[in-house]
Amino acid sequence: MSKQIKAIRGMNDILPQDTVVWQYLEDTVRRLLRQYNYGEIRLPIVEYTELFKRSIGEVTDIVEKEMYTFLDRNEESLTLRPEGTAGCVRAGEEHGLLYNQVQRFWYMGPMFRYEKPQKGRYRQFHQIGVESFGLAGPDIDAELIIMSARLWRQLGLREQVRLQLNSLGSNAARARFREALVAYLRQHQDALDSDSQRRLASNPLRILDSKDAGTQAVLAEAPSLEDYLDEESQEHFSQLRRLLDAAGVAYEVNPRLVRGLDYYCKTVFEWVTDALGAQGTVCAGGRYDGLVQQLGGKPTPAVGFAMGLERLVLLLETCGGADHLQRGPDLYLMSEDPAQALILAEQVRNQRPELRVQCHCGGGRFKKQIKKADDSGARVALVLGEEEIRQQEVTVKFLREQRPQERVAQARLGEYLAANLINQES
Ligand code: ATP
Ligand code: MG
Image (tube, rainbow, N blue to C red):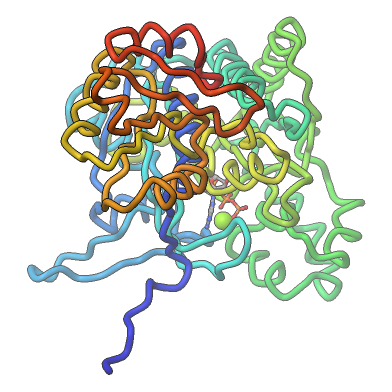
């Protein structure tokens, strides 16, 4: 026998029992974004490598070691997108949607990063991203955060996540802070973990993110970004805080929050949970006023965030937020006469389009069929025996509750189901 081919490590199949949770999450987010009038943008999964190098930054984890990059048959360097913002900006510019305009976009789909696969961290993973262009004030930052807070309420995750907030200041302010940080860290270089020592030269702000205890101890006394913020960023940040306070969205200011991509400035935020271990960030974003220009456009303020869907699905499953989802059919229709069964099933689907109707296929006696009905998880079995067919009726058997079975005229079945089978899941 030839060897079985397996999926690539870190790239997961999502099976029907789990897509139920995915669809619930996706549908909820879609509805939410519609409420806020954000428009969906669909972008290619592959872009020129240069796009990511120029936007994300050469000395970031993503560009240094996580990208899936290859030469195509024309010897052009292409990359499977590791995130969505770069492509979104590229598309916005290419189609003339950004200059002097206000836009609110969202996208959803797979992203690819060559990381060490573990719980909540995969090589193909999925994000829903939201980006807004053309607005420089803190009100749009607040809108994005308030919108995400509403999402957690809608998903029943309000108690599971908390908001961390910081301001990175202007590019100039960050540069001044970086200098002070490097000067300080150089004095304590030996106490830093090796990754942080390496970053001291390449991307020192990322050291603030380090989980290493020794590095954390050094950082406790380090200069704080807060003290280096320019006046405009300070004002932006305090207005944002006032807007969030007014909207009743709680947050913690975390001066260590820097985010791993180069293009952020001013506001950055993360929604984190303690329920998933080390991979606790479920949604992350911030302002990136310089990126559009960096990619060749006119200066355009912008702000956005991305959620990691695998982590949100895990969180929903961990805290019981997916327990109410219906996995089986509402009705399981059984008969030893397939023609009659298929016809009645169509009739029910016409009359009650909201119900999930599974028609037994594959023959067999009623005894076998009733077992299948039970295994399917259906709430109700519809039995179409010889007698029922003769009388143009159907027997309704409740599989999950103590309730006598009933004979119902086929002509009245739709009406009967509406009155007796209120679907609990909307
Ligand atoms: P982390 O610090 O966990 O590596 P990140 O800063 O690299 O996250 P972003 O680029 O901001 O992540 O992506 C936004 C969100 O996408 C993350 O908060 C997370 O929920 C999700 N995400 C990022 N990388 C992965 C991955 N490899 N597998 C699953 N989800 C991911
Ligand atoms: Mg990462």
